[in-house]
Image (cartoon, rainbow, N blue to C red; front, side, top):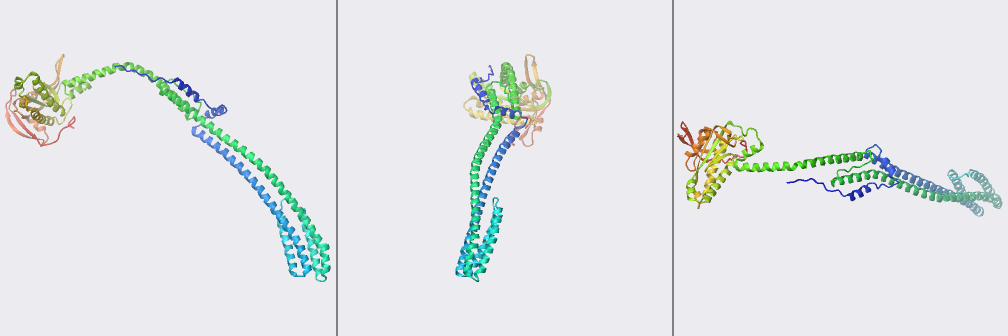
Length: 538
């Protein structure tokens, strides 16, 4: 098995294009971009400053527009005021003309109503004169003084005409024509001159308004264009201070992803992007170093893998000859697995009856196949209760519990296992009713006590097994047990949970190799459905 670490080859053409793309800052903006990039500030501060600059330009544009609107508004207001001034002058002119008309009608008819109309017209004239003078645009003070002076003479002339009219109407008419009518023409001339001056002012304001409109339009357009260009420039500068480093970092990461760990980038930014580029360069250096180490480790990987494969094969081989607990303890190098020690265990012997007759009646292959099937079924039951299968002794099995893994319920496990063995054997006999295996039975003996457990044998051949009186006792109980019978010792019975099984006394027996009578008990059937699972009695 060979392992090789080969990173993908980077695409040089794409990298060249990428680096060229990362330096596409417009020439005119490049000095400003570098200047902003080198400012020692956080990225959000730079962005905020850029947005603030754009906002200031927009605000300035708004201020200029507001000034232009105010200027045009003032000019429109001035034109409106001049038109109002001209209208008032025309009204005063109409008032003077109407007074002459009313005077003529008063002289011709003698009706006092026309005299009242003259008074009303004079009053309106003075009101309009005061209003026009207070709101007048331009320097017209001399004109208003002259109008007031002439109006005084005009009123005095009217008063004389009215006084003469009461005595001699014809003389009153002559006085009106010679004095009052002539003075009215003076007022009319002054008002016409005032109207002409006002019209000239209107024309001047309109001319200025037209010029200002063109100027303000051009100025506002130019300032708008400058503001827009300034905003675009500020936005572009801020954007390129972000886009440039992002593209360079992206290209560096792309080269790293393609397996080129020599990639390094130079970002002038003195903000988060500058720190990020330093971290990318550090990562590249670390990856380059780690890749070199990885190549060294890879050269040793084959040996490590071969050793692990050999260990797995060794573990698999051990599992074929040892119980799973013992095999795993040996492979794991668990402390004390090979040391001899005294420990309380529950020993089980399962003595199979009938294989001798089977061997005489069957072909060797058939006999071996039947025996292996039986032993396989019995071994599965042993491992189900996590018992340690010590050995096969011909057609018998030797099992013990509570080692190498401690099991607080070792006696219970042993009894339950024995019951399951008898049940499994009964099912095998039913499945193979036509074969000689249907005559097979088993006697099982169980004893609990302190024995010696550990590696026993010569340096060239060791067995992990148990020795002691209780081993012999369990073996003798199995020999003495009848077909399908389970015999246990008094100590084993004492360790069983109350009500787990039905047990009856099998009396005291003198067993071969045992110096004193032993009290035995026969297990009937389980009365509790509990099945111990896991290790340590869990």
